[in-house]
Image (cartoon, rainbow, N blue to C red; front, side, top):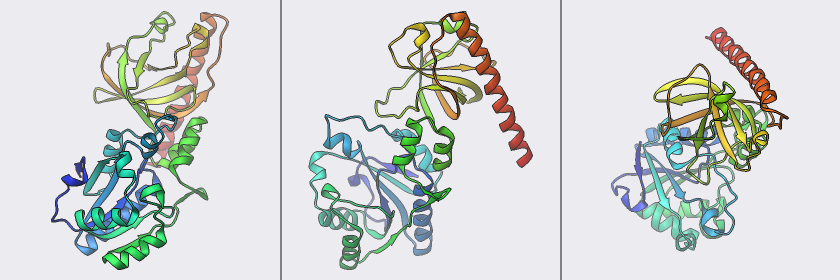
Length: 318
């Protein structure tokens, strides 16, 4: 997959089978759109192209409101899209000036004339152009005017619920990690740098890696204790992770820290990735560090029991 950081960087000699959108999460619904786009490209002799915009339009158009958190960073989106088999990914800067582009100009000047779009695949709720004024009906008219074919993909359901980025963000914000993972089609993850903390965990026999998330728009799941898979220095481990304010330690700073099972390496400043498997409990206040330590032991046992069950189930399936 080739990545471009502007529409202007895209080669002019490629007949595009194109879709566009934020594709936040690259979830199961998105994957179906991408699969269909690849099929058309193969059958019609074109090449599959995804056009997205960054920053997210809402972050640009409503600068006073940065509450919208996203499922993917750009790097995470690229890695997930590479699995889909599409050939080209264009990340075009979204600005206020760009937002004023009328829908007909957007289709004619950029998609048809610049990107040589011959086929367009869109989701069931697709809108485009200034103020999202472009509807599917208008797209249909423009496809006849500018000689490109158009296909609308119906909603994709998971357990009779239509999958969407909004629903996945809501699930994560409420701590329903397993259902969010089912909608995504993969394990939700975060990546960051290991930084120094207060080292209280060491005194409790549960040292933790404190993770700094540099992307301000990355969505963190609801506070609590999770069992996670840890990817570190090309190694895969497991552990238990806490998101929250650590009320027992009377800390006001929101933090994310993971205790890695059977691990003792010095990993300060290392890049770390954690995949969320299951939420185990709420964050709690304890009267003493001894009580907290007792709970951590219970958490460890519960997490390892869960991992044993998952491993046994996977072995049975295989």
